[in-house]
Image 1 (cartoon, one colour):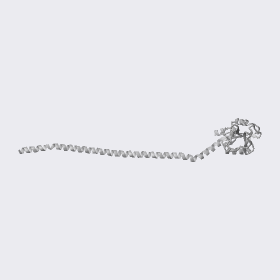
Image 2 (cartoon, helix red, strand yellow; image 1 turned 60 degrees about the horizontal axis):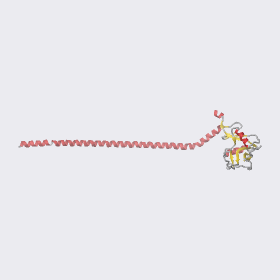
Image 3 (cartoon, rainbow, N blue to C red; image 1 turned 135 degrees about the horizontal axis):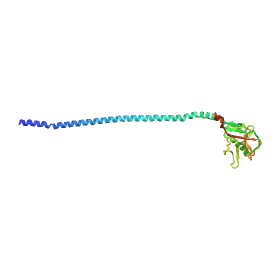
Image 4 (spheres, one colour; image 1 turned 90 degrees about the vertical axis):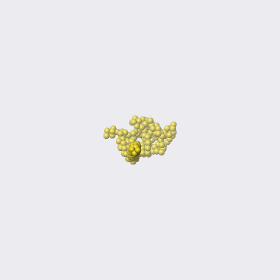
Length: 235
């Protein structure tokens, strides 16, 4: 009987082996769980590192964009305000140099950008004949454009009467220049008889009506644009 009991005890001991297998399985499970946790930790660290790198690149890109925008604005402001401050002087200098380069033919007088021809002959010619004389010289009767020109011609004609390119239109009932621009009384008024004198002259410090048929006391006056002479072109 005692031998049977001992045998039974041995069988019981053998029966405990499956528990060892279970323990082994548990250890395997524990190892697997630890391994998974380790992988999860590495992924989180990698994601955190990626997020920091992405944020850093984003900040750099934003900073570069802001700096570029500021530089563009600075250049625009310089281009807008710098020429405005310097352009009047440059423009005046260029205008002066350009006018100095302009020239007129012999026996013509230069004033500004125009050339004037003052005839010394006093003979009776009608308005059309006087104008043809001008056009034959590639010019035309004088049109007064501004106050400066008015003062110059008033001074230049102080001892003579010169025909102007200003006529009275009987159909429109107004004075008009040969370029079809209406005369403005803000610049000067026309004196004299308006009954049958439909042309005009300047002389002796005033502008007044004159006969379109001509007068022995009226002289011709023509104008044209001054040009750069051949001598100036060569230089």
